[in-house]
Length: 425
Image (cartoon, rainbow, N blue to C red):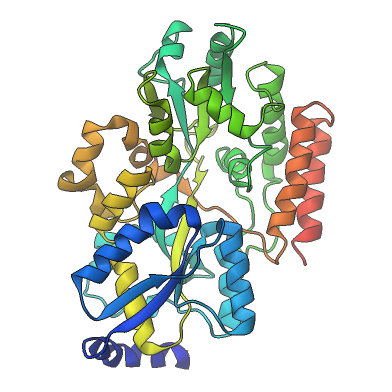
């Protein structure tokens, strides 16, 4: 508490200090995000004022690498001033850094903003993505919930409605069967849960039923409730049994099949919208759609993406980093990020008619994320340091289930055993 008061008390002096001497802050993000999003925003921010200069450290390879770099830097007291950490890895990182006094509770900074500022910019559900143990350690920068991409030409040829995908999993699978029957070189669909680099699509299968991965305290698994894990395994296996998904085809080749017009339905992040459109290049009628959920009342979709955190303890740099975070999560910056990638904007102001509202009306392919705001749920992270190994081991089990080498019942039980054993380390 004393530390939070001290931070708040020094904010006014720190902000004043940035007006007299340029403050340089260093941030960390992934290589994939740096060029397309962060570099243009950094350049704009640096050019629009003279008090703060933002530079980026050598980028991390991916989210897991960001996480590893931050833990290593914490141990050597070489942390950057700010970073963009994946939602599912934020809890373990924030708890570790908080114990060492190396992360800022953003609530202390938000409290200094004008009345109504918080509600005008960030929904409660969106801010929840950056909360850990009730504290706002991260401000969401990118957010995404999984969505369907589909080849409307193939859907029409298969007798489906090119303007609307089926709302149920049964309907999706039945349509994929009809697409598969169009030719020996045509595949029905892709839901590569067993090949994904993290457990995001597996968590989709739990949350869409109305389930959750962990309990409220975040220290015990909860995906066994109501046999959610077993239902997930049965669904994964059913895609192969129905002949609409082939786990023997590599994920990259599945994407190639889709963008070359040889697959009907493809599941991935809205962050891939721009790249997918560029790869298709107008070769077919490419569209996107909200994702399927089993439980229409309670079903959610885990939110991928990342949150900006402040890891410096220097008051002037805290103030500078906060100004930068406010800028990159502002309506205009989020309009840019959403258009350049397809991500869900994290600032509600970005949905105004003069910003993304009008853009989405004119470009329905990019509007799907805005139609899933109410489905955005938490992307949970296991306690401890073994999240990556948990997923590697679970992924091999899921693959065995999909290939028919294990029963859904045995596979579901193994998923529990793996998580309970490794999350305690």
